[in-house]
Image 1 (cartoon, rainbow, N blue to C red):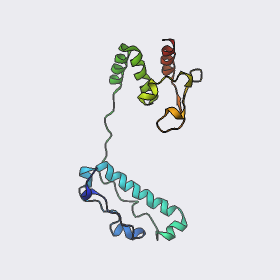
Image 2 (cartoon, rainbow, N blue to C red):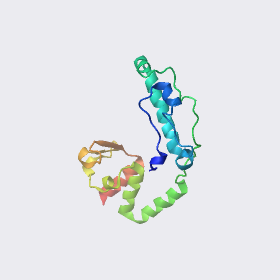
Image 3 (cartoon, helix red, strand yellow):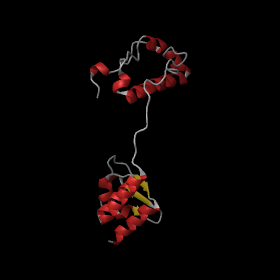
Image 4 (cartoon, helix red, strand yellow):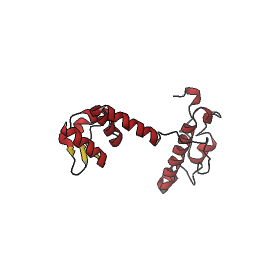
Length: 166
């Protein structure tokens, strides 16, 4: 987290467009160099706040707004896509999982369903409906304490059927 000298200045006592011209949003000049993505996200957030305020006439009047002063502010930094795992790496990983049998199957399920490791490894056979390809995790077993319905692809169903037989 950036230290205090890198924080953005927000002034609540100013209204509407005057706030922009009076430094509602005044990032330090070097923000893009140490936190380019954060700088762009803050810019987007402020644009959305103004868009929200302009959406209703009562808010436009309350906040003394006529237009969005951030509408034409360019991104503060150029963004680039991060590197992702390549398919050949996933194929090698999948083959490695086959070598470690049951544990490998659990890892495969985690990749296929994107559920947490603890949710995959628990014995929840009664929660599975393999004919409909659905795994319903009750609220007592999930981190957020909400029922979680996980759709299962054909490969996940085959793995689970194999695990049931063991």
